[in-house]
Length: 134
Image (cartoon, rainbow, N blue to C red; front, side, top):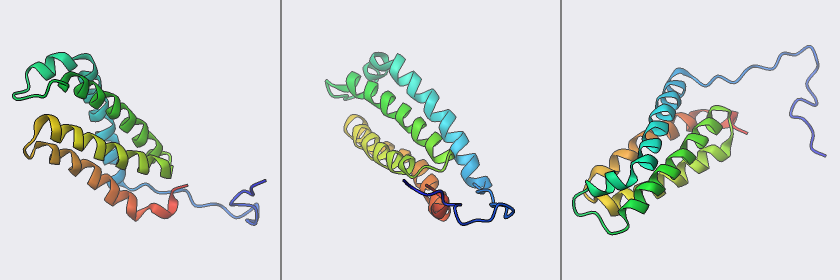
C-alpha cells in the first residue's frame, strides 16, 4: 500500500499549493482552445482540406483526419498538464513529434516547423515546474 506524500506532515502544517505561473497558464489555455478548434475542423473537413493542398499525397485525407485525432489527444495532454500529470507532458511530446512528421509528409517545406514552437514553449514552462508534477 502506498503512503500519502503527506503521511509525515503534521495536521496543522499547511501544504503550499502548486503555482502554475502566468506563462504556463496562458499557454495551456490558448493552445488548448486553439488545438481543440483546429482538431474539430480537421476531422469534419478532412476531405475538403486535403483536396485544397497542392501536391498532396494520395493518403492526405487520412492524414488530415489523423491530425485531427492526434490534436484531440493533445487537448487531453494539455488538460493532464494543467492537472500536474507527467504523463501529459510525455503525451504532448509524442503527439507533437507525430503531428510534425505527418505535416512534413503532407505539406513539406518549413510550415510543419511552426507547430513545434507552441510545444517548445509549453515544455520550457513545464521544465521550470517539473518538481510539482506527479
